[in-house]
View (cartoon, rainbow, N blue to C red):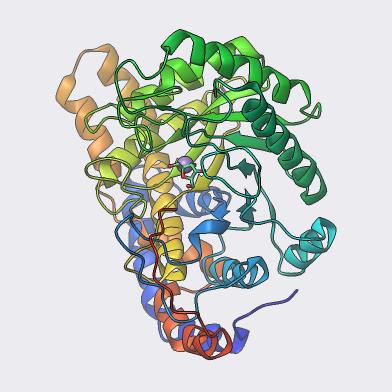
Length: 429
Ligand code: PSV
Ligand code: MN
């Protein structure tokens, strides 16, 4: 397998942490054993949790005001692939990529698949883009799948069908559809007619899904439409997914809700009705901030994972969510952010695995409010880093991925090998 970072460098870096990690793991193991938890078992489960990297996440992102590229940013998809391979090699929890078309258009998708496979990478859900004009003749300025002009709608449908074709060649099994369609002014759009047009377009896409594919519908409260978005929340999302059929499910991007919305409860409801497609993980304080997963609201992330683990443990029918990151790294090195975020997700998963489920259930039954709450808090407050780091180490990853990445000199090598055209435009991703 092709590995962008020298394995002996990882070994050298790991050697300076090995002893400490072994001691921390052993001491945590003793404390967890008192709670009747087998740490090795938990570590094995943690190692099964993976999340897909968004190909658009490895280049520096930006806001609508400006973008400040990092030296060594990838300039094409093959360079992005190499950066994704670094994230996977050091973090060992991101073996798949979620591509976005036409941003990731290449001339030969079989070659792309082979080049990814050579790094040990494969492809998760493909994403379509009808929220920006690309090479099409007709503009998406006033919408795409819901546009009043049927020619624009057809172009948008066609683009989604092409995404499916590309995805088939890449080995994907799902198409994620997010549209920016909506309105900025009351009266601009007929709510009912635009939803009818959406369903008509989506039915055409759904009809062309291969048997073993799924259609992930992503809702978003606002932006770019600031008054009303056509698929604005999980309610509209669920209704449309229901209307389309079993292969259509609802994708939860954590940033796409009103600030005070209880996302973990939405997740629980979607799981219950077998309509949870999966996630675009990120974090936010105000809106769709696209900050790094686990950086602002780690407790919320834990509560979401608590629902996921509960579903896993009760063998919830139809429960098989896809996990993807969707973040914009504006002020950090994207490789570092992606490794950190994937690690934060594993931490949240691990903490959720530590919840004493039988104590929680009896406290809930007995209406012992504080005991129930403290049962969750006990799991959340456990420092699980030794488990997450050991899970990485077991698979050849780095005990400290960021320190190892810095020591590797990868970024400065790429800064030389990938000279940039230093145009700094806006760059929402
Ligand atoms: C929209 O904000 C979104 O979350 C969708 O998933 C897009 O595909 C992605 O960001 C990239 O712009
Ligand atoms: Mn998203």
